[in-house]
Image (cartoon, rainbow, N blue to C red; front, side, top):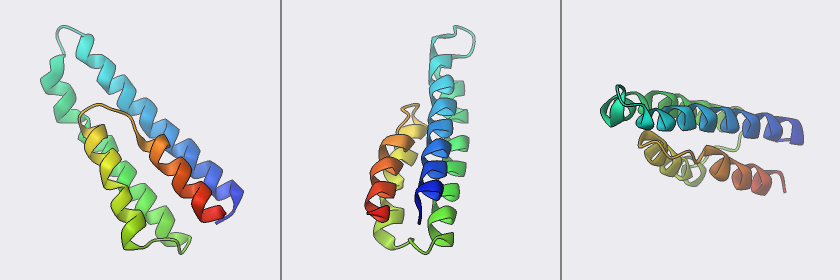
Length: 97
């Protein structure tokens, strides 16, 4: 994995975090409420774990430990807490180093 690929992965993680943050902010809209956010928030996070697993597999960096690390932001993001960038940043930096 090179710096360009790592930078793209971090950018994609930031995009998924932005989507999760927008969905989390919908909690404060009176008509939408928490039920709709919890119902919809898992969809972009499912795409995120599939995307990062696929990117790691393409780069030949996928193993059980790296894929298992991606479960934490999946669970947190499904409840409305963005965490993909905080997980992908050290993973990419460690892989490149």
